[in-house]
Length: 359
Ligand SMILES: *Cc1c(COP(=O)(O)O)cnc(C)c1O
Image 1 (cartoon, protein in one colour):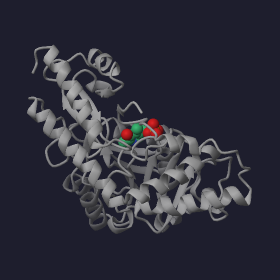
Image 2: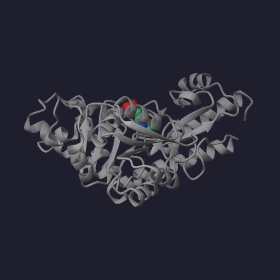
Image 3: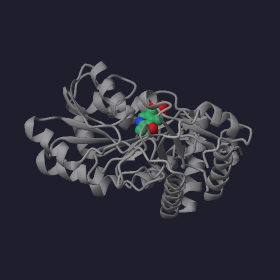
Image 4: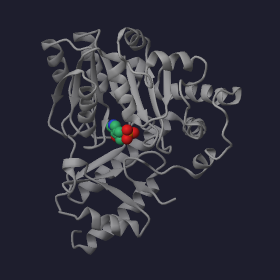
């Protein structure tokens, strides 16, 4: 397998790819319903929730849209410190919500204090916040933010985008009191793109019942009615559900704690490697992502040239995202990647740097 050190879509293990190849079952058959049922049950373990996980045929952005349509009639507080928080604000705005953007400098965290201050000034039905801001390699302190929301504005629902971290980093949905947590298949879960998973608690389900114009496809009330019959309102991505069911077994066999520890160890090693080479990390210390490291490109590396060099060795990294393209580059350490893959990457990267007289 040629490892890709990009923050999604990531490499998928061969046997997981193969799991998709079994014959298609009709989705309203008892055989498929059984698979759907057990996949949903296992998915709850990843979210550390006893509630429910909706499995949708969409990417994660679809569930960003579902969150704002189901849980807010109007007022949304959108926390932004990177491209995906910004996208969620746009999703809310384009769905006609009254959005207040709470933006802090990219690379700095959204703190409990700044959220508490915003909630003291005005009332919001939901807050949207990204757990792991992939664009800047930063992890927001969700547990503390959630505690502040509960204290200052207990009826404000907390919606968390964990697209690039769930499955690689521990997120305790129920213990932290998060109302909705969403993720995509193609990042830390190491599945092919095309599925999104959204965990929704009872409080959020109650809210959804009262919000008008939730739409059809992502309506939580409709999704729940069908989930209770181990199904979905429209045709699910049957083959991807096979892969999900299979990959969740693999993840649980590795052990969640072991998996989180593997991601953390790779993150620490990546930071250490970068700092030893004289690079600076983009995200503030104490808030650095455990699944992707964003590195400032102070040495003026041509990232395309670097990737051409790495591709000859069957590897690739990611350029900076959006406005940070060229100014940063990103090394992902999520999904199926192992420490030995990271060491191979660093050896090749060092060779590139030596060739440029930078090392
Ligand atoms: C990739 C990403 C998204 C977008 O997910 P899609 O599955 O491409 O819709 C949203 N949020 C974060 C944090 C991401 O990393």
